[in-house]
Image 1 (cartoon, one colour):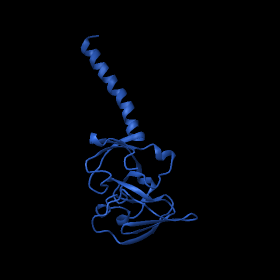
Image 2 (cartoon, rainbow, N blue to C red):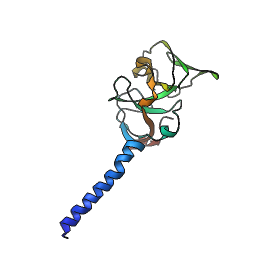
Image 3 (spheres, rainbow, N blue to C red):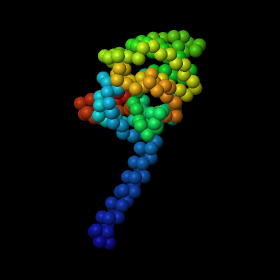
Image 4 (spheres, rainbow, N blue to C red):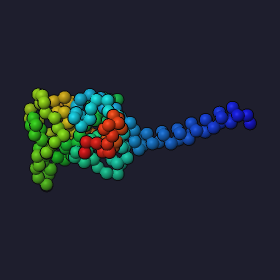
Length: 179
């Protein structure tokens, strides 16, 4: 076998093995995500590069405070990143800068949100009770976020995964950023 045939065969084997590993990894375990816009500032800035963990929610339920990526309910070809505030069955009341959660059989809490930014006009008072497999999500930069206050509840099936790693910018590399 000539050197060129050997090299060509080795390249094909490499490409086949790389495809065999990368495609399932991207489909089922993790995938890249680039933040677009100001809705999650100061937690995430525009153009930051994240790795999204797609495996955790196959075994565990999403939790309050998790930062997730999901398919926008009104256009599933668009992806958003927001923070989970309300869980299935809860009643969420958003009154400008105050978020109150009522969980049946447990009680009422007012969220403490040190990550939230309030430097502009807000939406006033809203109240919503979540159904089974429905979540209420908010951006950390409340005046600049189109979230559940605007378009309603997030169905569980739209959730892709949680922010697992921030890779870029290199000066802000972080594990489970924003939690």
